[in-house]
Length: 346
Image 1: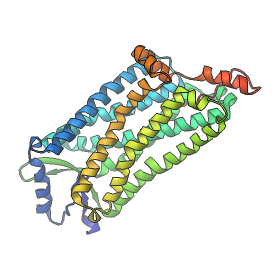
Image 2: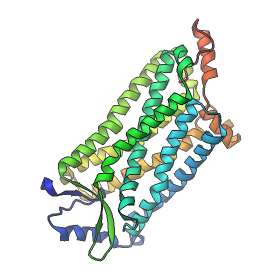
Image 3: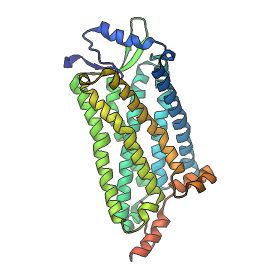
Image 4: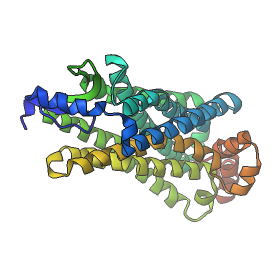
């Protein structure tokens, strides 16, 4: 394939623009009614469920953690993660309509921005998880110093930095997403990297910056935490520690298939096109599902699930997200000669 005319359409079209007729025929296939295809109906239904759960679930998290709970470092983290997921879910209906109707109705700007929203969500989430992991690691290693310097203001600054970095990493979507108009006037939103090298650089950079490096840092941080606390029950009993562990595992499970499949897409000629297309569609859905899993983890993670079910929703979330400073302070007072007011905040 000629690098000069390399085109990748919406993750599932691999036509070469040297032959514009072939490209238009490929797009025209999407004009078929979604109701006639079981896979299309299933994809639409799953995305609708993800939207409903993610949109209203994260709205609830934002409302409670932002307006009903005391502002702490922990609630700042969770509020920011919820805002990231909410942003993605807010733009999901555009893609749902596009899938169901097999046509893009929302113009050039929204074509670019809806794609960018997915990657802002991905990068902001993982960057926030890095910051949280480093925060907890430092808190375990230097509890007294953290007690004196850990603040909501610094946490907020870290959140702003993560969001700005995530916005920067989403720029390729703003550059490469395009709208194609068929001869019949119908339009489709697709990705045009222009060259194979641009495609490779973008995909590999996303994989390294959005997956490999973050998880390396997170694993190192949590290894230090576990090593530091291996002789006590803190790592097993701390609810915020369990919630954060669950969030990291959920992100890993939801995003790994997507990254693997888009890396495979770089050499799509080596794979069955239908299998790769379906795989990427499923990978995108699994990645999207991460946006509604987080609120469920906030609510239902805890030591006693039965007691949580009987309590109010607000009590569940406060129990899951509240700072654990008092618990860790009691541990530190028993295990060291340091000031009893110190807190590890893991």
